[in-house]
Length: 268
Image (cartoon, rainbow, N blue to C red):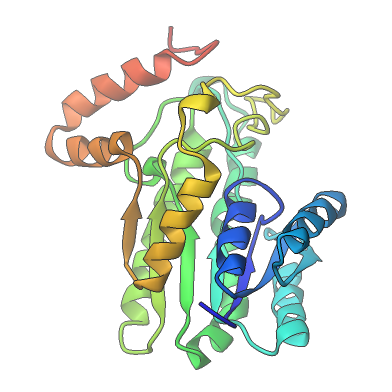
């Protein structure tokens, strides 16, 4: 990845920032994006202190024009785009029966349509350079989780899109990776939307017991270098995928039991 140009959406924190660090330490040139200039500035300052060549772009992945400007800015700064990491995302937590459907739309706009917009904006350059499109999916893209209607729907849709793109690019020299972290420590659950669209504020899970963002990023970096098609992380995540395929009724019961253990779960 030395001298490769990596565009990372949602790169100011969590897995996105960790990816910027691991790619950057391996000699890549990084452009991180996000909606908060203050958060981007803090991330860039921290990454530059670590010797990483990084710049930022303030934009919203759910806006088509912002993605076009993002690709243009990457070319202005670095002259090429080799890898796009579709990392920007939000989640939600509420029973479907109580959910304002505008919450699902917001999640889909960022987690799914944002990937389409960013990928289409960067794809011509990536095709030219035989580069990579990386989608940060989730175990929730393989197995539905209660209270996560919008999030699971967006990740299932993302997995379908990446499969289509992988097939279309089969003879075009473009690598497409579907990366599915299991539960990973980040701030995504603190910013999760509730049934009315307000922020959850606190994570209902024990973040300290989860895989760290740095560990997750290292795995994704390795899968990118090896041009793997799929990466499913954590033992729990792998078990969930396979049990769901082989024993779907058992999976329903196990997933319900696991999610009901979350703090303030409406499943109790």
